[in-house]
Image (cartoon, rainbow, N blue to C red; front, side, top):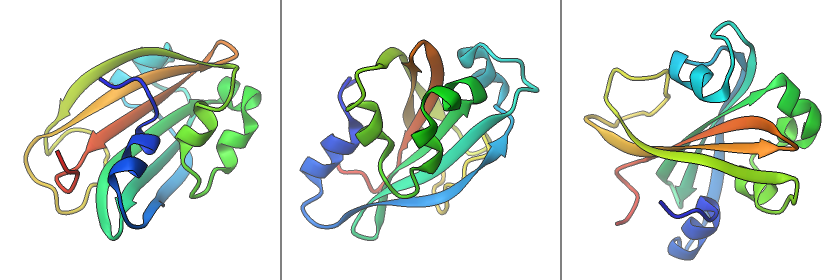
Length: 148
């Protein structure tokens, strides 16, 4: 439930090489629950960015970020992050406001996630952010490699 930057927190726990691995970034449709949280219709197109946060070669967090078109117009640099951490941008921009956060668990059949080699239930959080009043949704799923 920490409200600070997850990236910053991981950096304090990862004594070796931290990196962001970009799995995919493409236009797509939100899942029904994601559309509801963002206040969008299911047919809406959003930019979906999927990454893993690694300490050395071990993935600690899978993140799926959904950025609606209107939000991308306000924060165009979000579409060009590449392997830069999203938290670097969100927590350094005074126009960004953090909205609601919810803890959730993800079963093996839930979502289009690219989590390789993970079975059973994984816990994560969903956080809504606003850039100049426009929403974006960050799903962060804590993988088994993440230290307690």
